[in-house]
Length: 245
Ligand SMILES: O=P(O)(O)OC[C@@H](O)[C@@H](O)c1c[nH]c2ccccc12
Image (cartoon, protein in one colour):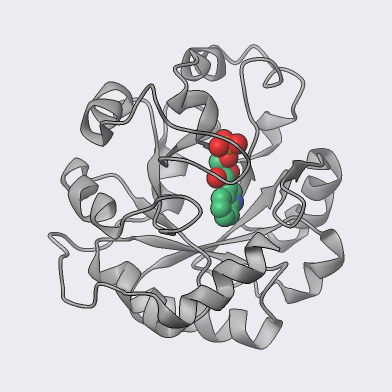
């Protein structure tokens, strides 16, 4: 499976370890709280994804973020190089916007967390479906030592026991099954499970103009959106108009 390949390739990843930070870390939690648009939007930049997306409309990261920076609470940068054509330097370059940067990768070592810090990341992704509880606790605590927040995402609710609810954690529900790459939506059910942790909740993946009104987005504090925004959909205005109350 692609996910297995990615985690295996982590062992031979070339990681930036020299310090390219130009500013202190920023809080995505705070940014979502103060976002005028509710729920706050975390806009993801990626060149492609194994689920079939190819970024042809917004392939200039600066033009893209210049267009949406006033409306979004944070940026998500895909840094996985093989299946997403990610580049760590994308994160380095968008620090200038002073928006919290989520480093979106299949993180499985403290070196990858350190590298995420060095390239200007404020938040990093951990995936509860694929990491065990002890690893997740270790990585969250290591991130806290760097004043970084963590987006701990889950798809398979049977893995909810892997969640370590620390104060620097935001919980994400990924609508996409990363093993099958299919959208298998349990947004309502996931909310009922995840709200008990008392942490900010982020709804992720496959959010678009077609379905945004049907999704329980008002129950979530943040929305992680890549494809629809990169494809030029006017999704931000629709969310801002709050038409799904
Ligand atoms: O492009 P979309 O369907 O709007 O999805 C964005 C984001 O949720 C998705 O890229 C994602 C969420 N969790 C991940 C983990 C690994 C890779 C990618 C992801």
